[in-house]
Amino acid sequence: MSLHGKRKEIYKYEAPWTVYAMNWSVRPDKRFRLALGSFVEEYNNKVQLVGLEEESSDFVCRNTFDHPYPTTKIMWIPDTKGVYPDLLATSGDYLRIWRVSDTETRLECLLNNNKNSDFCAPLTSFDWNEVDPNLLGTSSIDTTCTIWGLETGQVLGRVNLVSGHVKTQLIAHDKEVYDIAFSRAGGGRDMFASVGADGSVRMFDLRHLEHSTIIYEDPQHHPLLRLCWNKQDPNYLATMAMDGMEVVILDVRVPCTPVARLNNHRACVNGIAWAPHSSCHICTAADDHQALIWDIQQMPRAIEDPILAYTAEGEINNVQWASTQPDWIAICYNNCLEILRV
Image 1 (cartoon, one colour):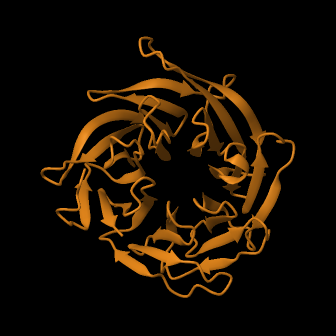
Image 2: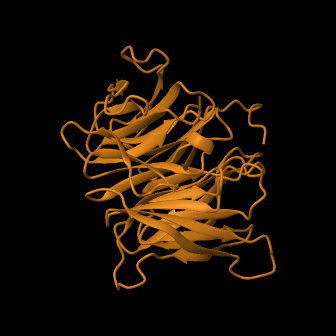
């Protein structure tokens, strides 16, 4: 899709509800496609798949499906070559894998770890391993992280091609776990980190799960809500505290000492996204309506100001930098999705 002829810098889509979860598709044949999750404080929620129409240069909704409770995260299968089935994962009460076709989206499997109990511990987040798309990791308020193995068969004639099994479950923190992310270090398959209500960032290796490494603890023991690995340099990650106005950049080689603090936001930060193509650019988004892009090359010298700022018409709930189209960043606020050319 060549949008460069039209040179529009911003495209906007208005959903019928508040948008919270959001993710770019990475398939080469579905470039300007995103999945959006509703945030409605009741059982019945929705997911919409939207795409940019080349001719009209407008977003259109291609598909809507029901989802129990709001999605805490949505992610397309990290399949940049388009060799796997077109799958989408969502977290909420459980981890669900959906199969997307041109006409419908259907539930492929529901991954439930609490086989013995009538209630479920909600999932706060998950990550899909880029090196081995058979692996997904979930984080939960029950203090655990679970690594799931997916068997994605290529036989297209059978119903329910995807089934999942628990590869491993570990008590990750002393309190709720709020986010999990695989690292690209050491081959990109076995290392992951988590953050949670105990205010720590912990690093794990799937091959040695009996111990973890604490790489940072919030000085005030404030809960840490998000973590995000640098896409080009696996030594760096970013995290942020609940109700915090700054983003902390960490270097795993220097545990417990932030290498930078990004603190120009004037209200609490909600989202972090590293550039897919550069190790020194990161975007942060907050309740102050601002999305800020920072150049952190001069670390460990202080990073005073962002290099780019965009002001939205509402509090920004989420930011996603398109991994296969590094010129584009998506933000969502109120009931709107906007994609911005950077």
